[in-house]
Length: 182
Image 1 (cartoon, rainbow, N blue to C red):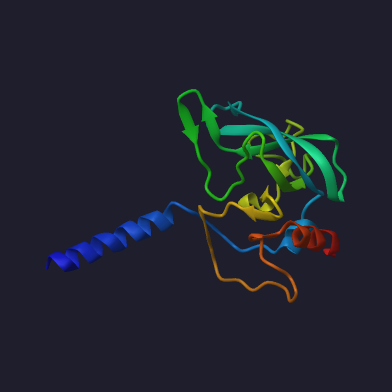
Image 2: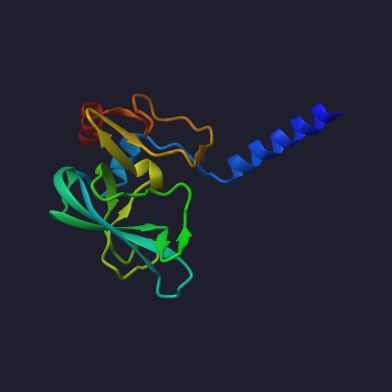
């Protein structure tokens, strides 16, 4: 009897852990590139969290120093607004969204600010946003790049032939796929 109760408890814990993650369709690198106004490689200079004007959500403004644009055009410094962050003793995490840390080298798939597309938490901030949430931000480490998808659960969905899912890969392959996306 105790074994059945233990198994049931473990199953509930596993389901609860899965429920804590965002649910998403997998995106290909090529899909992300096509849906972005710019794909840039750069370094995070700063990340500052604040409340939205209605004080219901926390957002983080990320200052990104752009080293190179692989697709589209972006200024040398870009402000990217992402949902979530920490203000004082209060934090808000939004599973399935990109997070940034000062000093981190990244490849970011960005959508230009504008009234039609808006940005996380504020449509008039002038900040860019990340296309595809966590799938649209890769951390560069040596010769590899990887998105942080730890808190994302994916539904089953096919990718177009020849396209690759947003997952860890050599930085050279990521760049080649971004530049070749049509």
